[in-house]
Image 1 (cartoon, rainbow, N blue to C red):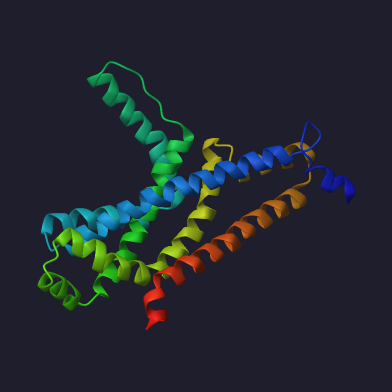
Image 2: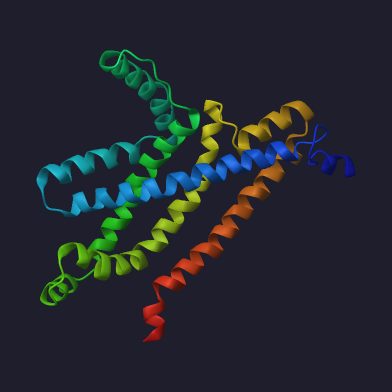
Length: 236
């Protein structure tokens, strides 16, 4: 047993530094993807709720595609197909060669998937806010931007938080998919360690514990956000 735990040591004799580096990539990928996906999902929800036929149709088509495709297939399309399309575009316009990294491809793919599901969560939250809230804000003389910021968004966060929390936990697990495009995340470095040491059960168990720890820490953070969002209710 001591020999197994020695494999987690740092330095040339262990794999602790590689796993820690992979954990850093996994967390960075999730943290970069989250705000992009939230903003895109919010904009898609606004488009769906706008009543403008062209916006509603465009947003619905986009979300239907990325909700329907497997995440792994989306990642392949962005990393290979998107890269080819971008290279052709830059060759035509600027006569230059461009290539984006596996990390960038992972962020783009996961953001599109996250945004597609988040848009439905935001849309349900929008529809859970009574029209009287908008009318009351208008009666007080608030402009649309101020109404959204001061009246709608605080309620939107409270209503959408349970669904967004689940999407965040799914996102944490979906980051493992980027290992197939040679990004050295936690799962890829774990696979390398397994291939070298021939200790699959040990290293996969360690990876499971790390992902579980991330989920538990996220649950504490989500609980804090939920208490903040409901602070007005507690006061009443």
